[in-house]
Amino acid sequence: MGKLARKVALVGAGTSKFGQTFPLRRIPEHWTDAWLNAVATVDNGIEPKDIEACYVGNYSADLFNHQGHLGPMISSLVGLNPKPAPRFEGACASSGIAMRQALITIASGLMDVICVCGIEVMTEVPTVGVTDALATASDVTFEYTAGATFPGLYAAIASAHMHKYGTTWEDFMRVAIKNHINGKENPFAQMQRSINFSSERYFK
Image 1 (cartoon, helix red, strand yellow):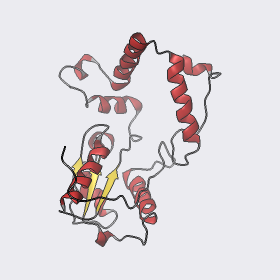
Image 2 (image 1 turned 135 degrees about the vertical axis):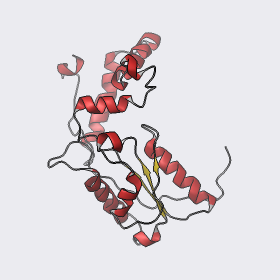
Image 3 (image 1 turned 90 degrees about the vertical axis):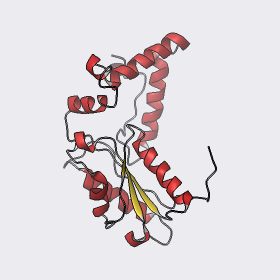
Image 4 (image 1 turned 180 degrees about the vertical axis):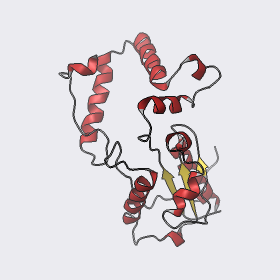
C-alpha cells in the first residue's frame, strides 16, 4: 500500500443515541443529532459552506427504511446540497469504507474538507424483517436460499471456535459483561445495564 500524499486530520465527531426510542426516531432525526454534536466539537466552528462533500456509509436504507438515494437526502438536511454526496455500501463495513474514501480523497488533494456520515436505522421493521435484510449481505444463491442468517452463521463460528480452542460459553459471557459495563458508562449506548454470571437467563 502506498503512502498518503499529505496528512489528513479528523477535526470533529458526533453521534446520536443508539437503540429503540419513543417516539420513533428515523434517519433524519438521528443524522441531525449527530451533525449538531459533531459541529459542536470543531475548534472555531464549521459551516456547511466550508464542506466540499458528504460521504455516506449505509448498508441498506432501501430495505430498512424504504429510502434509496440516501446521500443527497442526508446532505440536504444540513445545507450541503448540491455538493457531492455518494453512498458507500459494504455491509457492516459501510461507514468504515466511507471514512476511508474520504481520507483518500483529501490525501490526494482533490478536496480539503469532507463530512462523513455513517448511519443505519433498523427499528422501523420487525426483527424478522431485519434478519432477512441482513441475510441479503450473504450469497443469496448459495447461503441465503439455504436458510443461512448472520445470527446463525456467527453461532456456527462461535461453536467452531469452542471446538478448536476449548473456548467456553463463560468466556463469551465475560465479553458480554465487559461490553455492558462499558455501555453503562456511555450515554449514547443502546444497552445501559450491567449483567453478571448470576443472570441465569443469559445462559438459556
